[in-house]
Image (cartoon, rainbow, N blue to C red; front, side, top):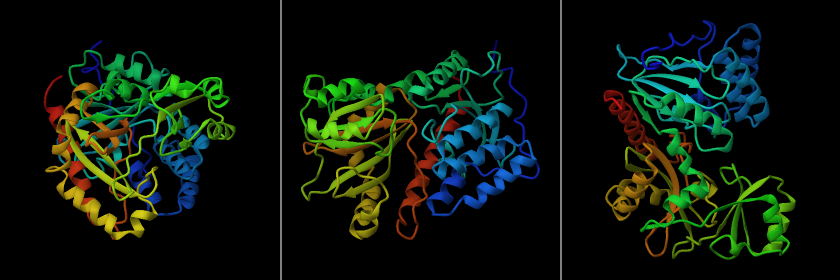
Length: 413
């Protein structure tokens, strides 16, 4: 079956009584500290009166942003029972400059590339099809110029990624972030792919079942027998993000204490690499590569090794914001030049059109990569009064992402 030619008809529209909000608008409201409770109540009332899967998707997002993940996934499931294809964006120009079909996996906000934040102001058409093992085998893809695989490398995405690979195999249109390449972004796979590349430093990361980590905590064996390094080690649950469950343990006794409060089946274990600079501060960068070109999205500076952004230290130290603004202004001529070969290797070895990574620099000048992923949140939602330099920088990133889609949509696979 030629799925490029046998497309679905136009995506079902929401009810006339409801204008969909979408991830970018809702995330912006949550980031600004708005209470989404009343909005959630209005959405609940609307969905009780209308069979509107668009409103259900928004309601699911509100629930997740209010940290009610099980309920959010249940509501999303109801929406997908009604409809799997959604028109998220209509182009202002006629005809649309590019028609993008995004293939997503059902799940929470960490399940897919949050492309909505990158394309909020772009002029293009975006349809989203949710893919998993329940998708009908004879599904016909809607008309499009380019496909973006949004499903990221998580265990629970395995079925979706396999199905997306089958749907797009031999496809005549460009497929960005092919699912078979996304698998290289897990922590252990990324180390195997990039850990030995000249100019790149990565901590040897091993995935271990809980029983094995318990044995190490009990002294039955030393973690250095399976992980290239010695205490302190970094330990985190498999599938966790944003520092959730992430700890540094200095010996097996601290490891045992950590395991008492963490009941998950598998962990990533890696040696801790001290990346503090001469001033004792830690500088962590979030970079995305779009069509092989690196872009800086933020630089966090902290006295703590676990750097989150933004956070009180960046707000409380204006000189750190000045340093971040300077880094953004000089990135192309300085940081990107120093690590040019490392960036080229990342592009060549991952084979991904869009990839993000959190990184730092080692004392000997190498690019220290902590994590690679296609689902990192990249946005312009920081307080413009506090971070006035961020929005212009992020617009450069957004424009590059849009240009990549336009280029991909203009040429066959």
